[in-house]
Length: 88
Image 1 (cartoon, rainbow, N blue to C red):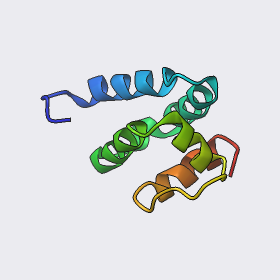
Image 2: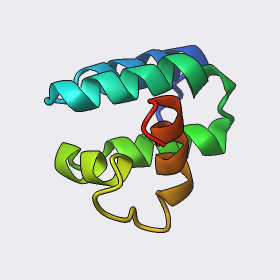
Image 3: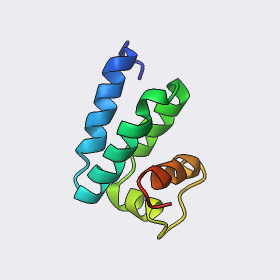
Image 4: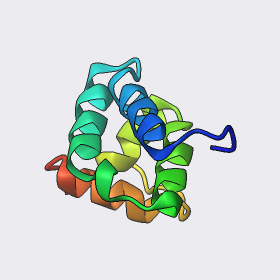
């Protein structure tokens, strides 16, 4: 964050980043998660989600679908996204 961005602006930005990934599969998976859980995340949770969004779609999809193990830093969030998206 760091730009003086308020929570509502940050949530809107993260929702847009969730919807416009570049691959349809990730758009769908991350939209489902952001609609279901983003509002409930605290600042640390939003930081973790934002860090996850910086990863490539190919890596994210493999982690969420269980094809590859997510890095430890992202593993809890990836597991939650997979569960919300109906993949877990």
